[in-house]
Image (tube, rainbow, N blue to C red; front, side):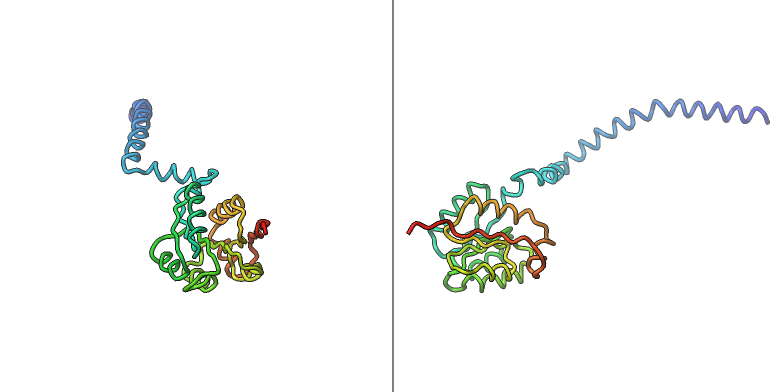
Length: 204
């Protein structure tokens, strides 16, 4: 009876001592192999993208901006600025065209003029927000006295023409960085930040 416990103790010691040197090689081999296997399916790429999102300027490149204005000069000049900043610009000459484009492809933000043929800005704003409630919209207009209308409608910002481009770009970045909850709160009339920039001084 005394011999059996000593044998089991010796066996346990033997197993424990033999297990110890085997653990480090197994874990060290497993880690690199997992790293290699994760690289092949492409998993590190989304991890890097996720880590890069909070970085300054990371929300800008590749964002799709629906630029709605019936003036081709305004569209072209503003489009040049936005493309130089890393945005993808989708131009539209009127509200009807804007609605068709927004339903056809993904859009991250809308720059919307008010005075347009076919379908004006406010007639475009309503179906846009109904069908795409999380889509931030900046009203860009030369029409006066639109502050309270834009605020009550749930627009993200109102920029009066002629615009201050640096302010517009900063406002776009701010709205693109908002959460869905912030955008919904604005749309339903809850307390939310509203961005307003009056027209730059005109030279008469």
